[in-house]
Amino acid sequence: MRNNLVVIGSGTMGRGIAYVGAVGGLHVKIVDIKKEALESAEAEMTHVFKKAVKRGKLSSTQVEAAKRRLSYDVDLVEAVKTADLVIEAVPEIREIKKKVFETIDIHAPESCYFATNTSTMSPTEIASFTKRPEKVIAMHFFNPVHKMPLIEMIRGLETADETVEIVKRISGIMGKETVVVNEFPGFVTSRISTLVGNEAFYMLQEGVGTPEEIDKAIKLGLNFPMGPFELVDLVGLDARLNNLKYLHEKLGEKYRPAPLLEQYVKAGRLGRKVGKGVYDYTEK
Ligand code: NAD
Image (cartoon, rainbow, N blue to C red; front, side, top):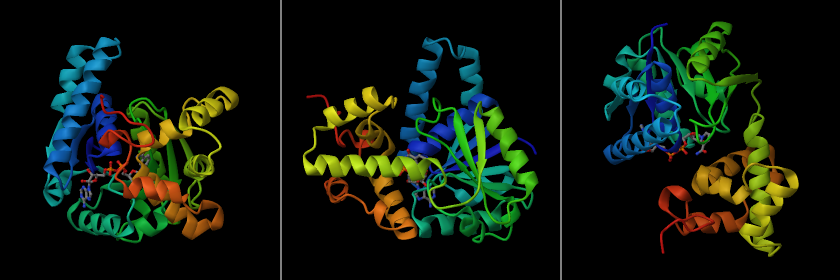
């Protein structure tokens, strides 16, 4: 496999995946339907590059080389024509993902592998949107991608061993560890983290404590690196709600989204990305 990576979706996750790909030496094209999203992705990656130089993790020469390996596009059809691997990071909505996979299946080379960064959905079903199910796998990255060491790989029913090996190698190039797990809604990590995060919203709704108190209790009492509200603000409350809705449908009552979470999403309090989620990040 050559080294042309296309990342679809330049939101919270896509920009992080593009960043670690470029730093690892891959040629990365990042595609979004919104030009503003691409501009915001470029600005954020520039910021992360600057911090990496400041902290001595990358030299300025490495950053310049990585930046040269990055390009931006709004034309998905054109972008995938020379792709070796496509990683999809569009919203967790079945119809959007279906359309994307149907499109890239037509326009990407036959040799190209496809990965989805879905948090919860079935890679078998996603593979069924294509005529190359043996070349499709889930690569579940964690947020923020440049800091989190793991990629959870989930095989679909027809994923070939070769696909697992290729994607493991690419994960290594991106500087990541991998686990390979079998398909079940929510895999390992989303199944646990959505449950913890949802329970925290129920506690907040019941008046058990303030967000600060609940976060502090979980961090210092249970040794979690972040509190559930700090984490959901980073993940995006809308993204979390979509995951919960899917797991509620597939795994039952224990994943019913907390009404307070739904209310925050309706109010547009989607997390850090908009300046306000459970916490307020706007400068007073
Ligand atoms: P996001 O909303 O931040 O970004 C999604 C991007 O996709 C947006 O910029 C949007 O304009 C773009 N987009 C929408 N439709 C498109 C299309 N047809 N073609 C190209 N671009 C399109 O979402 P996110 O939080 O980055 O999540 C993306 C995926 O990653 C989801 O499946 C989510 O479940 C998963 N995920 C998210 C997190 C997290 O912490 N946010 C963690 C792991 C996995």
